[in-house]
Length: 304
Image: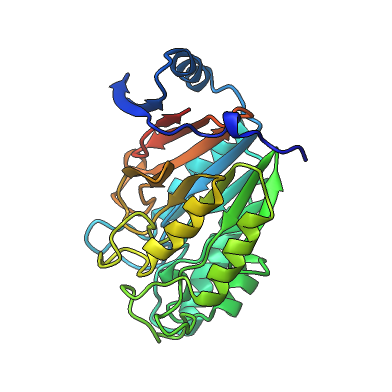
């Protein structure tokens, strides 16, 4: 797998403005902007195409507030149909795949039901752990249920490096599970930080991070990873990280910190009916450009 030169990585000092309702970020030159806009319109395939879904919160229980748990199955079916048209290389589920059950048995049933629905997607899947994934379940039980060995890991594809993080740890390093945590106490523990630093050091490929709890908020924010500033230092020091995709807060949100894009995606569970669905495909291009095509409530983002 060939390395990527610094000139082809994401540039600093971008300016943002709106065009056709989508947020476009580019350097001073207008050429990359027109090329990216055309690529987004034509849905030109990047070196890698990824399906992104977050906060499904599937559960066999009545709606609560704006969350319609049972409707996730129909929304997921729509996402599957779109992904079958767009043919992503893999799909990432960004956490909170299920919601809490009245018992461990019921929660396991929730997981079995949603995994069965997801298995109909003919693409490789990667799962980010969310706090609701391990409410009553342990991490080992959840990972076994989705057929994944690790809760944090990395891999290369199409000239890019991808990292899946796990922030479902208490401040003392204890992993979430069996009602032993508060959702506001999310942390990336010291062993994972050490692994992340070493992992990013060994690659010169442009890197994309997948997370559940946001890494771009103040450490004191209820939805934030409590040591997010420490995580960001590692990401920025690597010089390779271009973007972080995350969920948890259920709302579209974008920020740029230290030259890295942070995209918080809309939750699939929010709102009734397919009009309130939300999912996306991400195309990454050899020159470092990123195009996020959002569907329904998910916003579009085009980055050069």
